[in-house]
Image (cartoon, rainbow, N blue to C red):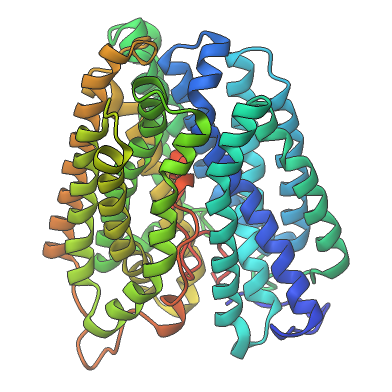
Length: 510
């Protein structure tokens, strides 16, 4: 747990000051989560207005995810070093400013650039939200405060598909970004008036800018090659050069992080087999989830004839199931150990994804779409709490913050690469999303591939994940597996489902 700089006394959850802190952090994190949700719902409308290729739609999603995943660890470090409230506030201002720029974008290339810049703001905002809670409340109330933040965030995220679908249908897709203006203003006012400043006095030195730049180049180069290869040719000198740049940057990133005294990504964490295995499962499952929830709104609207609002409502049961069952899943995993839930859960998720084969083009929501959504929700409810908690429980308490941030980044990276790689493998061409008959076969192949990846994740868990011995005690602590998972639909931006385990902060001691 990162230290408090002593500028303000710790709060209790029931105090007025504690409630204002919860309000500010919930609104801040909900702003990013809702934005992720509504962008996925709006993609077909944006594509039609800008006459975009499928690759451009991929970039609208992955551009945001790329900068967020690459800079998330750096954003958490900056908050710990220079003040969590300060960096959180800067992130909110940046995020809102780029949201306005997104709303004013005249074409797809400009929207892609502004989405990349919006991800930078999210990288400053996202880790700060939960880090502020961890550093603002007394020990006895910290678990309850995190659970309250998680539950209220779930309610906000559940509203996202409905809000996004309504705004797209009743006004314009541009309002899905402009809605961040009043939310951001409220967050800033609450933060200035009620959120205490805190930082980790043990952290010093300069930020790992070299590591951050190399991470952006690595992810950008590989992502460019995967998205643009199908349209301009895999043998294109540009594609080959960008993939080579990304590969070399990835190697350089690993070397730099290995020798730095205070690296952005401590590679020594991966010497822990349980931690490495959990992150491998996270990468596979969240990659499959990211590409499925990226393609599903397109399929529902382009092939199924759903309106944006109807496609948002179609996914709502997913969030409801997660909110209802994730806490119970966490408690069960605490009692029996994580191996069985992490083995069975991803397989159920894979079955749910495969069932979407029946939904494509189906005239009935109840028989075509809803069964797949329910099975997917049940699988995720069984998987996410033990998966995230195991990632934290497998390392020492002093490293839980950075372990959480690493797990968050791995989840986003899985979604980023899956959205870039799986559609062309499945046969989705740059213009096929405009033609239902051509999009349907590719969508079906893609969800089957995603389902197979989830089954692979379950097999990895069965082989590599272990339950703690009686001498070790539970790896899953009661205070990290009891709150619901709020952010399901934000996986369209490759964002992980957030549990009461702080899956998106680096607030812990380094």
